[in-house]
Image (cartoon, rainbow, N blue to C red; front, top):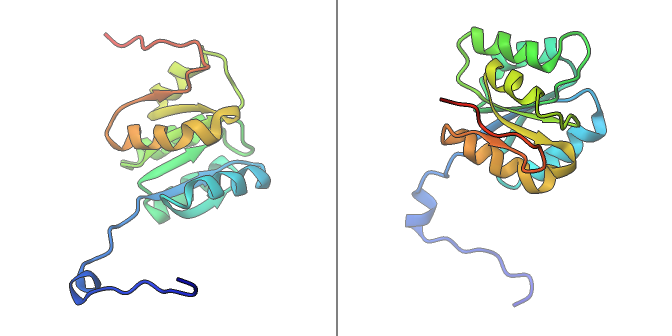
Length: 153
């Protein structure tokens, strides 16, 4: 059927729309912010994008996102330090670090700062959405290419 439109019954029209989780992005490269936004927007509402750690702290306070996707290496304030400040302020946002760093020794530092996930940028398309889904259920996710094993007791 060409040019068809969706017809809704009155029951369907009166149902509240299911709320999408709100995501804040932080990366100092505009092209990466656009790429991440394109990957996430079909499933999540991207509420903001910032390019440094200090702006991330302010935006997290102002926007109260459900999730923050954060680069580690950013100007003004590192992603790790920004996340520490956000968590210290009482934010309930789930944090996923999205980084080029594949060193397994960095993972504990990120998780200790308050993150629920660690995704390497080379696996953005395959790992970011699952990492966010894990975080929203209070579980941790680390990209499988990072040779890291949980050291929890």
